[in-house]
Image 1 (tube, rainbow, N blue to C red):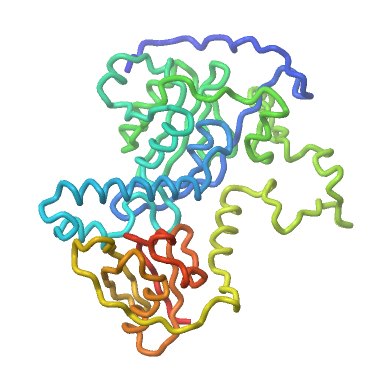
Image 2: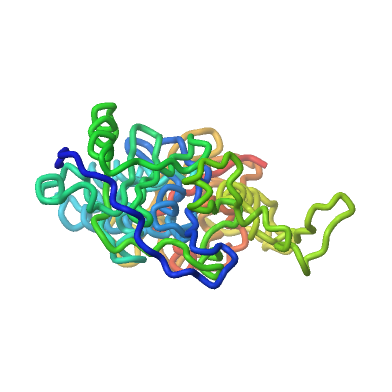
Length: 376
């Protein structure tokens, strides 16, 4: 990376947008950052990725779908290339470990981030140390960065020829000068951070009222307020007209329907999704008994493997026919748990699967899944 002094260029001239923001562009402020790790891999929630693209483009659910696809691709590769295929020790160990790309708390691997950016925006996310990046590209020509150390992730993004640090531990976005950018990146790497970058073609910054709808309203800041050093830079959430037509309570707060997520933060939406996944199943679900079918031979046509984490903490791995009903899975778990009632959950967020008892394992997409059980 070039560390030659580079003077800060003047802000790029902007056409005055038609909104009340005059010629100021909006910068999206921090959202809640995930600070945990997936088993054996550095992981994150969608927040820094959304800050990088300056819109609420990725949700926990959309990244979970990508994580599942990556897991299946890895298993397919191992099944075809490992000696012994699906019976090899490495394959069975990988199955027993569960997902390598998302953990139960909703934290995702760097591979998921790369796939998400590539599929949604056709953007690559190389490590800044990768050959062809550090040795050929002037650092001030790079449009955005995602920085990671252990469980801490944050984004740095160029907007109107200024670099903004969108670290969620800060009170507000902070400008990093062109002159200091190289030194800042070197310091981060010396502190143990891995730095990933997008070289070009990030989505444009917000310059209109319509574009503000791409993000959460409480996280937008006016660029002119940030540059002037205001301590209470106006955000769209402070707009006194934003609740017109929605009604107000006697205490002056807006009335918000139980399913309205437009004013929720990403963390609130994730908690809402996790809470919904813990709701008790409907009483109308089938309670009939299911017979445990014979376990098919390994490699038999239509045979699939399912991993279990039983209520007592033990693990189990069993083969089923993909045409078996999900109710047969319940019969297998019942054979391991005496006569106690058990609730089974699968997927992300983990959801009760009792409503699928009459569906086949293939139709329910449970082949290769980890199913968690608990006593109820």
